[in-house]
Image 1 (cartoon, rainbow, N blue to C red):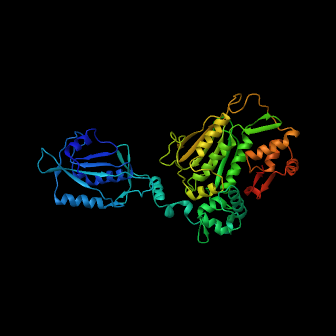
Image 2: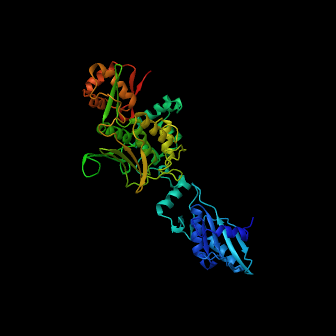
Length: 469
């Protein structure tokens, strides 16, 4: 249905804005096409020729065959091609003059970004600007993941033999035991397992397979994590500063060990059992780190995930972006999952490292609430998504029940204490158990040998403890 003169008057009464651009004549056609491209890449809008932008006076212009051809030619320079209806509206008090109006639909997540004469534009409030390169590349990546997504590209530096078969077998076993993978996966060749996860192209592993299972980081600088414990509340002085390398599972394990090394351990006696836990729930920290490893922008090879522990807070920064549907303000509300790296996310889900997609923030909040720890906050800063978790201040009862005794477990409590630690972190090593309990590794191993309901499945960092109920 054509736009009427009355509808036009209503449309322009509020002056130009994010979804309305006014031009006096098609003498400004080229500039108008820049705006049209910006509408297509943002929220859509009306481009109108024949209205004075400042006075909002409806002037119209003469429209000839040549005018129509010029408009059609200008629209042909838009890529991808657009099917837009050009409306010509008579101006009652100006015979033979017409207003030219075009409406452009807005951009939807997953569409190819539009360009005019090869250049992309977008709207910033009411201003038309050239689209930043990183925004353009991200939209290209999302529109054609098979062509542009980093995780889907064949690995340049690794082959199947470079992947950790023991680790792959270990996580497969975990997925089978938790009911997310078929029993057949236990005996299938590694190539078949990776193929079913869509982690290979022919005999070549994709980058996603390398990120998950590589034994050597090699040329992949993004498989590095920065870990620091700073003195005080700024970065002027640090107590501990490390850089660790490895695949996703190695980095997760290193991060959790760093938290256990530098965060306070609290505990309470429940009957004869000593219940010990970190000042910030380990399950919340683990979920935040997993989110960072799963959703980071691995194509940004010169950036790394960083974990900083201060006296008053923990900051976990991840090189990446939030999906356009999610903001720091609404991230705590229920939302569906928008995994930046779907292949990696699928493997972590099928091996039970992550639960239902989109529930990670909910689990973080529930774990903090249960322990009485302040809710984390999310910010976007300089190309990083930063999660900030406040540490309970000394003397504060937040996160620690009243009357909680401190110290290491007594000899008659050690078995129950070991079981509690393993339930809290199935990947904990005997060396860490020894350090936390102020015992020798030999003592820990001796106690574990007397606990047949606890067994270690797998080997090295690819393995985990299981408790038979």
